[in-house]
Image (cartoon, rainbow, N blue to C red; front, side, top):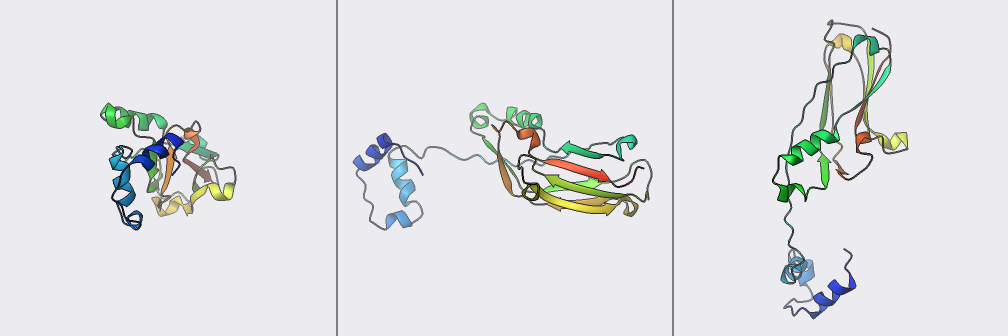
Length: 174
């Protein structure tokens, strides 16, 4: 924690009844910060389950495609539904789990190998940018995979559109 000189002076002037071991107990430091008015913020945690459906035209199945999984507009829309007092405090989005389901909607049992990967495109090193990968075949019917990245992204990030992308590569044109 970084503290400015002015804040440090306020802390030092504060008369506290803390023993040398209070800092090691939960609430010891929080008690001091509360006394001088620095620990006023309450954390707001909001859970959201989002689902989307993307259709891929059959003529594009022979190409490598990239889709954005979490549009920033969707997040801003959700924030606009919150009370303004809470919405302005939201700076980060935490992503716990992503589930992807792929199925052929035009014909069942198509023998076509597909490679899927979820990436964070902001990371330049491809190995570090991969969050999850799956290789399957549409012949089996539905393909489903889950990843649990447990990562957080700053909403002020200018590169937010590249945060999570789904890459699909059909190995043969259907």
